[in-house]
Length: 394
Ligand code: SF4
Image (cartoon, rainbow, N blue to C red; front, top):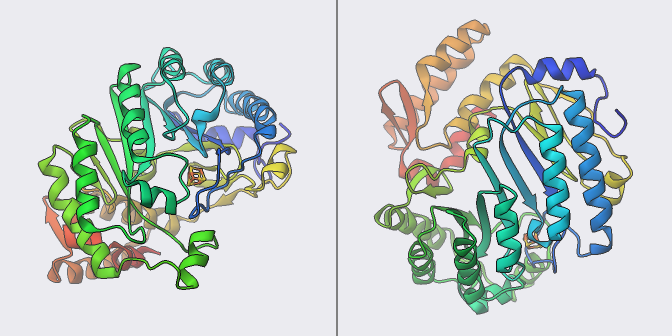
């Protein structure tokens, strides 16, 4: 059991926490060819660590599969970093150990994250043949100058080429990330990129706001006045423009930042917002089983040596209950408020629920929340101002 974050909890305790519900399984592959100027993820350019990382991931898969009694898994997500930097043989080894260690019979979705400029047809065909059926590309923008500013390793044409290669390789389920808020990015460019990406027939698009909260080279440029971020109004215009444009292109919103064709939602990511259990392996990967939660070390050498294990946190009843609206309101379908009332009563937390309801009534009066049957949902404007609304539950 060494290397597993089991401080304060036995394997049997974890098995009970995991319950009979299938898990989502996330693996973090912390390598990139180069570091983007805005990146704050746990990733390294040192590919000398790659084979040791794959070995450690495989050892952890075996250990966790055994500790949890070879549990059922219904969604897989290989994220990063740049998982498409894995050698075909490494991906095959990881997939084999996954199948040996976990029961994948209920598997509904297996997603690979990939970056343009790191895939070719043969690698993609190999991944598809191993059973990976969904691919998500970090396209960000199709503008070469903006991509250069972001320190991306690819141009816009390579973003489109990667999506095309994935289709040729048999990936019917393709997604692209589109970034908003890049210095120098005009509204027309955002909407034009969305149209071009939708025209490739992809089934899913994630819209991200450039986040410069943490120290990074692009933040230093902005702080020094060498690059100017778009204003809040410009960013809001871009999000509102996409809210109007993407449904017309067949991509419906299902979460604050995510749009999909019917049935094309990311089932793995839905589990986070629905607060379903997941196990994350790899540096910085987070797990949640029942009321228990932990995050692995984000320092790659420490993670490789099995050091920096996080202590398991056990969430209290109020924290657990608050996560239902905190996460669920991000979804377009919102939260079943009547079911939340029942759960609040069962947890003896009715006063907390009443306070939330009063806040939601105020947001509704302000046009930020709407009721649909028993459900309460954010309006389009509520989604733009979601931080303020969701802070009600923190
Ligand atoms: S590709 Fe993603 S993880 Fe890798 S450096 Fe760029 S932003 Fe970071």
